[in-house]
Length: 335
Ligand code: UDP
Ligand code: MG
Image 1 (cartoon, rainbow, N blue to C red):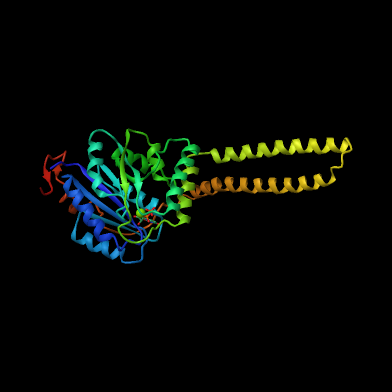
Image 2 (cartoon, helix red, strand yellow; image 1 turned 135 degrees about the vertical axis):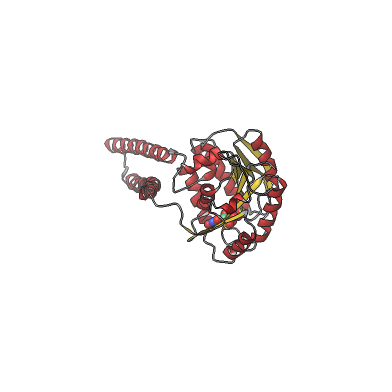
């Protein structure tokens, strides 16, 4: 048996309807790879049956590890906790709802074994998602790439394999507002895409309402770009120029004796509304950055773990990893 270890990270938020199926599919795929594996489920503060179901699985199967958060911290943070705890030579990040087919993992592993440190899934087709979601997702990736200073591949999600080297980089990025797919692009290394068709959710509803989508989108743009501030600056410059031209025009028309009284009122009103709008918008944009600085400056932990199952690096884990201790040359584990 190959002694490499793969960690599969699965965030779960109110996913009672998919827990069993997700576990079954992941396990059968993991077994088919002939590698050692661990599946890390992160219960991101669900209060339905998700935590109980996960616990029941973890008691039966030591390859399954569970992290229970003290409350809902959000998808990106849940995945980050998995990344922090994973012990694998590579990690695979996958959603619980089976929209991303686990059956692709062996191909990801093949590419990894051929020397790629990041293998990201690229969505070729997306089944069962609303027109609105498809449209906003498409628009988002286009805007993101125009705005951001790094190249983030189009139509990719968090479904990806990351080598241990990339995992180490991510662990060293303590940012609070996280956009993992951007962070893993930023890390560099050899990256390759793997196209796939995104399926419908196996069961349950999306856990990404518009509000969470907007938060993720703004994290994606603001964490990787200072262009919004530059655009605001540009807008300021343009209004200033327009204002300047308007002033010259009004004064010269007065001097020339043209009756410009009415025009003056109208332009005054437009100027106030327009400049006022731009100013408030600009403050908003700057505020977005300031709140992010504020978030970082507090230095709070990213997440709080309430309970972990099968997570300790105890002798239990050694039972499931076959290998040789480099110091004593003794073999451990079961075959
Ligand atoms: N998720 C999470 N915390 C949240 C929201 C979502 O851990 O606050 C998980 C969810 O359980 C799923 C993954 O993130 O495994 C992606 O969510 P979902 O499938 O609802 O998003 P969509 O595919 O609709 O964008
Ligand atoms: Mg989904």
